[in-house]
Structures are given as C-alpha cells and as structure tokens.
Image 1: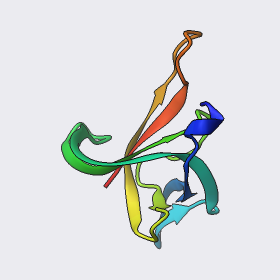
Image 2 (image 1 turned 45 degrees about the vertical axis):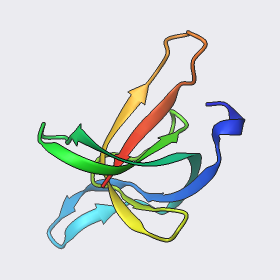
Image 3 (image 1 turned 30 degrees about the horizontal axis):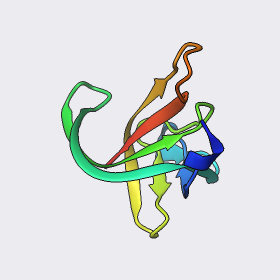
Length: 102
C-alpha cells in the first residue's frame, strides 16, 4: 500500500478466540491505513447481512480477523465485521486488507 495513503492510525486488538471466561484478544497494535466513514451493507463471517459504519484499508500483512476490537483516531471503539485481502496479483494496484467495521 503506498505510503501517501497511510493517513490514519487505529489500534487493533486481534481476536484470538474464546475461552471459558469470554473472548481472548492479542496485544494492541497501532496500524496506519486509510479510514473511510461510510455506511454500507456487508456480509459477516456467517453470511449474514450487517451494516458497516466504516472501512479501514490497511497494509496486507495487518492481522485483524472478525470480532477484533478497534479504536479509531477519534477514540471511538468498534469491532471488525470482516476483513478481506485485496491482492492485485502483480497488477499496478495497491494490495491491502479491507477491514469492515461496525
């Protein structure tokens, strides 16, 4: 992903799974990318339609599976609905991870 597109910094706590006491998250990591606030309908991990309030485009190596916690630049906390790899396969387009947020 081109450096000039890395305009926003979010904090991601990747979802690792569930334990007997609830959800387990990895350490918080700052990630730079491009944040777009736009409401749209997306498909969740189980195929259900969900309303997404924002899309975060991050470097392809970013770890942000569904159910991860995210803190946006304005301090608002949200959850990852789904994350989709956008790999151009060698074409001159930016490879990135498209993260749909609640």
